[in-house]
Amino acid sequence: MKLGETVKAIGVTDEFRKVINLFQVPAGETPAGFRHEYVYGADGSMRINLVRDISFGANGVRRPTNVLFSANTANPFSVYTMRNFIANLTTNPQIIYDSFLNNPKANKNNQFKDRYEVLKELCKIVGPGVDISVEVNNPFAEESALMEEIAQFEEILTPYRLVVKVPHTGPLNADNVDSFLSGKYPAVNDGKPEDFFYGHNLAYRLHEKGYRVNFTLMAEPYQTALH
Image 1 (cartoon, rainbow, N blue to C red):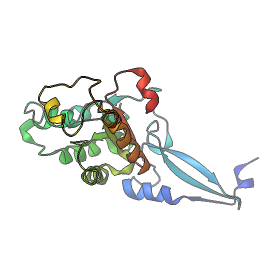
Image 2 (image 1 turned 90 degrees about the horizontal axis):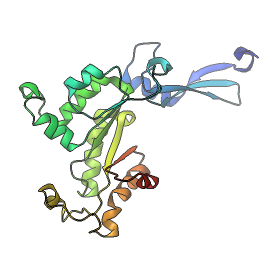
Image 3 (image 1 turned 180 degrees about the vertical axis):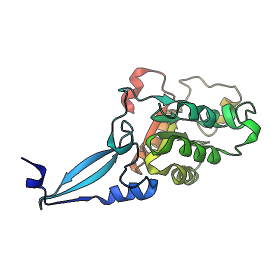
Image 4 (image 1 turned 90 degrees about the vertical axis):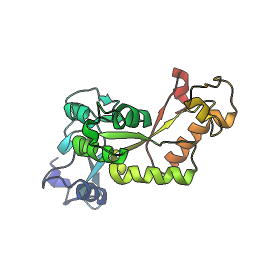
């Protein structure tokens, strides 16, 4: 049976329009990082939808490799050289500040002043088809402050690229995290249940708010069953 025999009208979904308007790709094209989905209506209509999927390049064509490569860096100069081969960037405060922003050998001529400038440049380099994982500076901050920080990430990266990285905090909490950062490490079992599950609960709340989450700092394979 031919398509024309069953489909009376072809259109696009509201989500399709939203994605096209956001990323401003050339006419007749669809952005990388989205697969084409066809929605059939009982009235004989067919609408084309765009669904976030980083295994796809531009125009709904699959990436040439079965493996989706991820880079653990926030250095725009490094990312530029690998931009055609990665589907994901993962960062954290150490990677952004210590390895790049505050490293004069990496941040040449102090070109980038803060992480928001870095994120904007990364978006320009990798385009819409690459997810970017970003971690808040202090996971123990008040939730209102965390959400404000994440909203800034979302404004730059768009909801399609943003993945919020949440650390498994173990025995750490707001009272002892400064000691940890200064080199005084608490015993791995020296904590309360609310400490051990703090990161999990934060990730769960973010998931409920519609964010995609990258859970990090797990030490054993069996821990992944919780995530």
